[in-house]
View 1 (cartoon, helix red, strand yellow):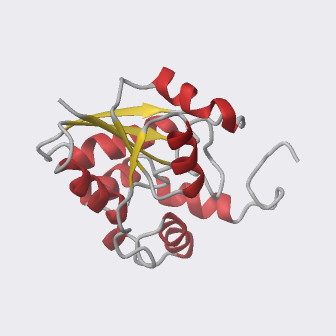
View 2 (tube, rainbow, N blue to C red; view 1 turned 90 degrees about the horizontal axis):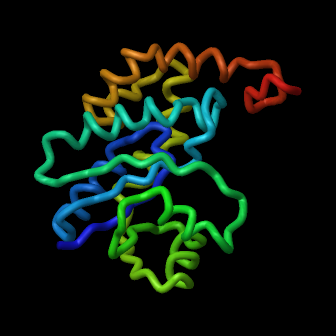
Length: 177
């Protein structure tokens, strides 16, 4: 049995992520979906909580013929020990999937096989684009799976993004400044 890990912030989980998971499903028996920056929420860059992202991932991958585990991974800000942190928060995995150069490097230095895959329509399916469209009231629903549209509606996520995007705090919605 082969278990892989795919880490992303999933802010929100979009069709590009979904296409990557579908590709990975052909390689592995089980997949850990590592929710990066799990400690971040309610900012323009990271509007959704880890729990909300778990809902998105779980619902969006439910119909796939693949066992998935959604695991929150908080930011550690210590790259030299990041992989061991990920391993401590996750079920054991055999291979990591990433196109992020730093993530690739860190996993390789830890002796873990890394597989890269071409990104799916990256210019269109990108978290920043989805969040900007939500903030501007544009068409964002076509960029995410239906289950994510439903989850964002359930949590009133569009309203949250629109409100925090208008924040006059310090540009990132940090209320402490």
